[in-house]
Image 1: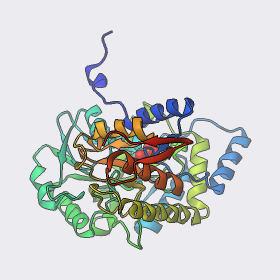
Image 2: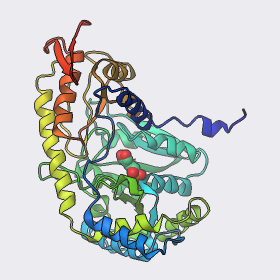
Image 3: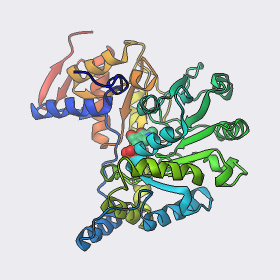
Length: 405
Ligand code: PLP
């Protein structure tokens, strides 16, 4: 069968593939622990349920404007003012099917073939694939000092006359790193001087621990939104735990929003009004749900750090936000795909190979589940890899003896 070369070369989403493997194992009755998936376990916030239920009961579920319903855009404008101290116009906002579509539409709207986008490793798996789908070239910058944050000099050195954008995700999936404000400031100044877009994927921006914050790029630009090169991507998936509603948005200069609106109108059309009502309910409703998620994850992060202390050979840089951690397991095996499949086979724990995020030798652990998932998941990983850990363990009701170390 003859298919598009470009489309056929797009990688399968590793997390979705792992979910499927885990589902099959669970169906066979195996006691699988899922440290692969990145979504909070909370129920949909009540204000989101009520608002979307009201929309549904009205029976008025029709096409929506391609850039979003006026009511949701109003809620996003308020959110932007409250959280970013920026007053933007409705023409600066577009609602999309999740932050994923925001990113696709941004790159589709700013890139010409062969244009380059700087991607900072470790990076979210979808960035390079989305850029390639938009005929651009991802240019990966990997920190050389063993941390998860490239230096400004490393980033600057990767910039060429083809560079159209730098994508910044802080707090970061997969490492949990929060970029220092000085780096954000330098990048804003640099991008605006060079006329390069700074795409800020802020999807985790409120999930930061220990009283810290992720410095927003808007803080460091003196330009108004219309003349700024800062583009902000956000959504309800992570901060409100509303992954299934598929609502994200972009705040950007109106010229870009206009092009993105045409792209949306000719592809997916506007997001379902039921989902948009839910997002509006979440943004306008009680905000303690966000703090509850943040506290639960921060507690899980403490449990993770505690468990990792007795994991000989593993090296972990403390995550400062998100619900991910990216331990370095090169002391056991530098091939992360092999480690992840070994852990699934022997310990029934789902993890994601660091290779997918541009960090070979590491694995990504999601700590968005229960404390029990984190404690038991790490205990099983230690049992499978660390010869100094006890060599017997219970997986479900089966007593397992380690006989490979
Ligand atoms: N950006 C990052 C860094 C993510 O981790 C994710 C989801 O995992 C997304 C964007 C996509 O979010 P959404 O579910 O709103 O499409």
